[in-house]
Image 1 (tube, rainbow, N blue to C red):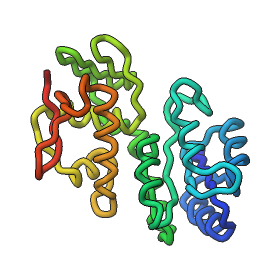
Image 2 (image 1 turned 180 degrees about the vertical axis):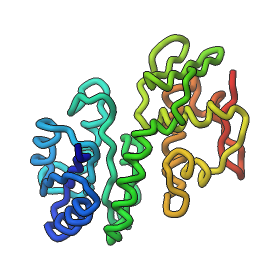
Image 3 (image 1 turned 30 degrees about the horizontal axis):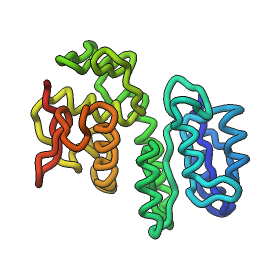
Image 4 (image 1 turned 90 degrees about the vertical axis):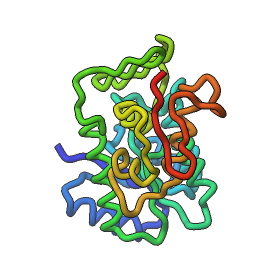
Length: 237
């Protein structure tokens, strides 16, 4: 069965070009030109991946992202989060970072190469398929934190922590290499799956969101620690 990609973009030329390139690579493609149509399609049949423009008629891309990632009242119910690649303009840096805060997986800046977008789509879907955890067989247990790669659950003090797919991948990778320091570029390569065109701020935002969920004091983290001038490491309690 072909993976289904939903393109939400109000520019018909961009939609047509992206659709043509994706279908050439074997994907099934659905389209929406505005926010309300996108919400309807998402509810009717959740795609395998969402390509989402931030600036849309009716309902903007950030609102759609927020509804998709709302743990208490999700827009769609699936086995995992629908991965999101955002389409942004260069002047929308604040919105792009906010998109990461809300749980977007990747972004690409307009104008963009359709071939690069296809590579991003393949990379995101490849990470989901592999779980980005190297199919480890055994859960990781620390004094207060437990991670299960099969159920993709994280428990802190035996209480379930609600993480997005990418937050879990990042935490699993760091926790699988305790005390080892990784640069943001290395984390982009290992967790996001691309080394040359990723934005290091992606890592920064995800680390901050992760700390807010698993650290007793996010400003003074004990698990995911910053090694100034280098990167991040996981410190087992």
